Amino acid sequence: MDKSLQKTEQEEIESKRKVYREAKEQTRKNARRLRFDESNPQPKKDSVDSPRKRFYRQRAHSNPFSDHRLDYPKSPESMDWSKYYPQYHDKESNNMLQDVEIADIGCGYGGLLINLSKEFPKTLCLGMEIRVQVTQYVEDRIIALREQNKSKDINYQNIAVIRGNAMKFLPNFFKKSQLSKMFFCFPDPHFKQRKHKARIITNTLLSEYAYALKVGGIIYTITDVEDLHNWMVEHLTEHPLFERLDKQWEDQDKCVEIMYNSTEEGQKVERNKGDKFIACFRRLPDPEI
Figure (cartoon, helix red, strand yellow):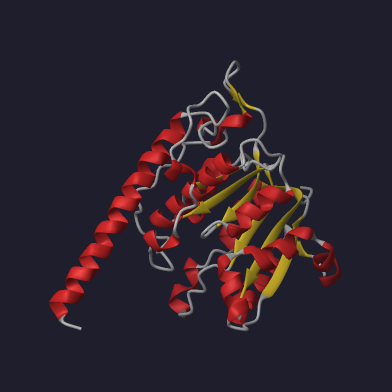
């Protein structure tokens, strides 16, 4: 193909992508201002349509140590959750009716989050994702699902996504013992040894996860990289506040089944006939002093 023609076609593609994302950004802004209830005006068609992934292209991974210009609260008490879960916010008292209990760390394109919404329709679930356009895709996906299911029992009001870096700011969002479940699905393996410090499971980070998890809460991990699986198992096993749950428990737990089948990355592994390695750990009581 002629290079000038190829360049023109690429520019046209980029132009369409820009126009599409700008329209979705306006929908996003409107959704943040409005409560999702029957008194709202009829939404435009593009807010009801599910987003098209090809317009949200982004690199597979992001450096967690970079300055991403993220917004985050000074403390969990200063976090305004009302714009993320409007139906769980009491306007008269200006208080949330309940707290977030389930966190999907590095939620990707939101497959797990959406299935968790259906399994736990009365529990607030949050996805945290560091990549800008991936976060926008998940937000647009949730907006569309809420509009498409306004009159149904499962209306997706209990899920939301935040662009955030859990490795740096998790305690800014969650109080001590707030969470009951945390998911780490197909995290960046950081293959090179000098980059292992950037892995999402480390001794230091596990102490922060233990702080946010209530006693009896569960950490779920899944990966298609055996070396990373062994790394996560080793660090979680060595940590005094976690104990591994056995295969029999995993086989009976609904969340393991959802995690195994619902993420986009997991489905890709399935198509490529790859292996998936699972490990689940329970939060233990703090040791007596």
